[in-house]
Image (cartoon, rainbow, N blue to C red; front, side, top):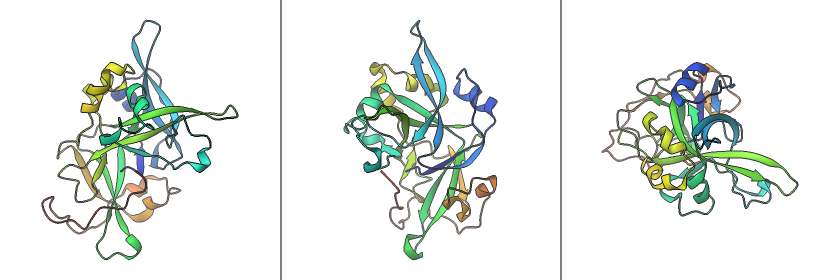
Length: 250
């Protein structure tokens, strides 16, 4: 499950990593929350049928085409990799409208034993090699009954790996740099290849550490929310866990 993330890398660094043509026009964000505009890269074929990548801003909160009134539809910020092709809400988008969320960190919460009211401790996750994160996603253009149009997207999640399972049982799916071209291709023939990319990262792929509770409030969008905080040692992956962490959405 991924309910918050950050994008603070310089524009030239993200442009170089993701390989798109436009210069991204997105200020540093340390606490991006659902329903806010989020930066994504998506692929389109040009007139010569060459795949080109584009930077766009969309709403984080996926709306399937059949939705009549978003006010009466659950906010979808994540989609499980295991059931993408089984659910009508996601199947068509996964076959033809895959995207990448631009990020350099994301946050997960670990429920603490004995904490009141289901309290949880936040952790920051980032790539161990310092590169940006290409978070797998799907997007959809929603059209309302009165002519409204809104581009929306959600993050695809997969099972946690052995290193992170003590904190949360889900992780955002991370697409490796060499797989970006195939992932963004809107040709349905690439569906199975794309599905194979949705697996937990290697156990040493991510660094993570405890941060303070300021991240819990979406209005706290400043670099101090990423500062480490003291914490007790985590149990090993083989040890019993406290139970599944609280999920915001599926």
